[in-house]
Length: 187
Image 1 (cartoon, rainbow, N blue to C red):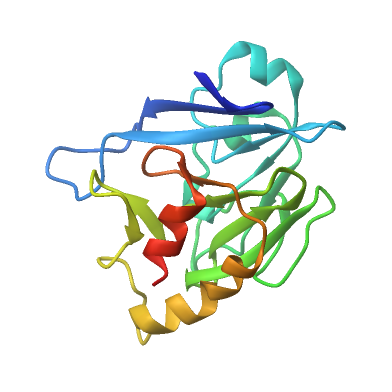
Image 2 (image 1 turned 30 degrees about the vertical axis):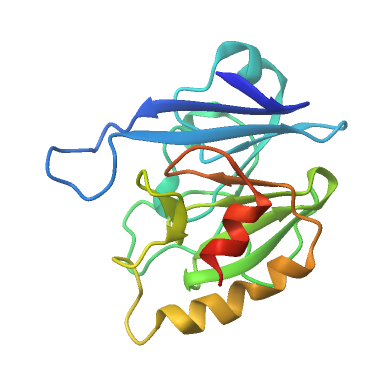
């Protein structure tokens, strides 16, 4: 675990469902962000004890990033489940366009439930599967577009992020990076 900015922590852990040959890396990223009145965990897996003790809520970028969220005993904010999902994450459902009571704004990514999250008080963007880093820098996950969704459409949907004072980009598939990486990915 490392503190990438004051009150923002990043750590990686091996995803328990990963198998050799999959297109994504075995190590996935999770984040904790201290907002002053609480610590939010984003797509948490193997949460370090010191952060688990301080955490007040979990925010998921997509429902399939449930990872350790249900076992933490915290309030969970989750995008709508895929249909049908025999075991949906229980929590407060939110959608693109919503602002959560914990100060997180949601933007639609490749799918209505794969969201890009903006944490205004920390000027940070948290991304799940829409923007990833496979070692070539932050980029749109071109293997992911949902049916009928083109890359250019997603870029246009996410371009309003560039009007925000984003300083950090926190991908759950990759390392934390800066605003310039987001600008390149959306150009």
